[in-house]
Length: 398
Ligand SMILES: [Zn+2]
Image (cartoon, rainbow, N blue to C red; front, side):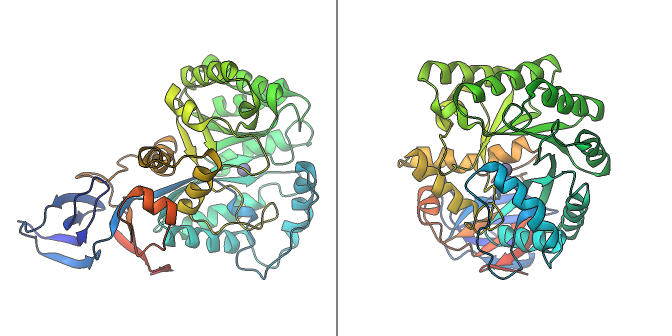
């Protein structure tokens, strides 16, 4: 048996196998050996101590540029409306005594120490910030490329049509390295759904990038937004490249309309990202997944100008979402875990995600027996591997 770089011994798998050894070479899982099987020579051997091994978590909706991590505690300042939070950002964030790159790095490392390997983050592109927040995130992404993969959405937080110059800035952001173009409440924020959607779909078409749109609009207005996004996605042949984040409006509709919307999203290849928001109606995540929509999850705002909550833990987020949608049984918790891991990875274009021979050696160990326990109790992660390297242990980045 030829030598390998790394072995993880005494591991438990989600399917119930115990005492297995995972062999890692060249960033991939090369073998999963049953108890008692001869082990190859290895450069490094780590003992999982009987802990459960799970594939890397995916945080599919983040705002790394807004976090306050790295700074003393800052009380929440905005009033209880989205527009107040947007306006507070424009004043608060540029005045912080720590750079975007440094604050984002603080949050990325917290995510990684809790088992996250893949992140999709939005970054504010506004008339005030122009490309400065993006430049900070590009630097943070490069500095942390050995710890996590990070996809960046150019996000018009202050609107597109109502914010002079933002359409051109979004295009500049994509040229500068943003992977997708974003949008926000085309009717409620811009009062011009056609204008905003035509603009961002135009940028996506010209530059060959995907789209991820924040849609907080309620009820029928939200449904109208979903319909318009799905129609443009089909018309431009962008199935599989478009995400709607939140879609709160779907949560307030009668079941027949929810069902029709789910079928339309599935046919259009439009994915849904959710963080299980408090204070808003929530789309029927499991019914959408049942209809064929790729539903994935993210933390959204983590200790920032929008929210004092969170530490970047996607298993804690899974517990919040599970509590919010009232799922309790193991099979549903396993499906919820997939929304926080493999589905998100697929949507953001990670190939080889999973726990099997030939898959990426990006996974973590956790003192739990099953996925249900891992979500329900979300104890601290012990070992975190990213692309074959041990990158964090007992909550600390190595
Ligand atoms: Zn968001």
